[in-house]
Image 1 (spheres, helix red, strand yellow):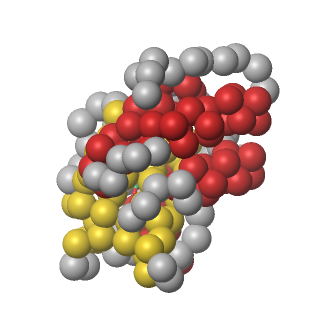
Image 2: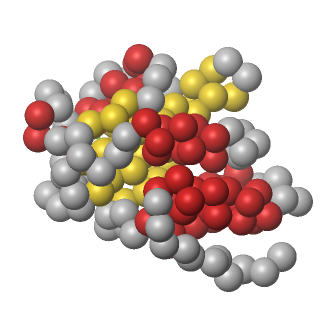
Length: 157
Ligand code: SME
């Protein structure tokens, strides 16, 4: 496996379409979850240049910080708290165009302006979330939701 990522410009969907086979290549033949989450976070950050991309995993009644790319972040989030904890309690993807307008948003970085959080399922159980933060307002839409849900579906949890 080549470890270099090919970065493309263009439409958001074209960027995801280029990235997905490369992510499949990175995950192929590797069963270690930490390694795979690390490479998925890195590949997304490298292609899109977002502020922060990373995983939180359920441990008891909290989400605990997992592999990520970006500035240091809060390590534990209670169920129902912030965007991540709300994604957990609602069990669905949340798109937040302006984090300041999301009640209870947890500001790990003052640079974060918009956010998308994708639930991670193993069988039918929610076992974590993928969190993505942008420097820009209104960065994420249903195209991101569709492709990010597809990407987390590639990871064997
Ligand atoms: N903003 C998130 C917290 C995690 S950081 O953005 C990395 C939230 O409100 O849950």
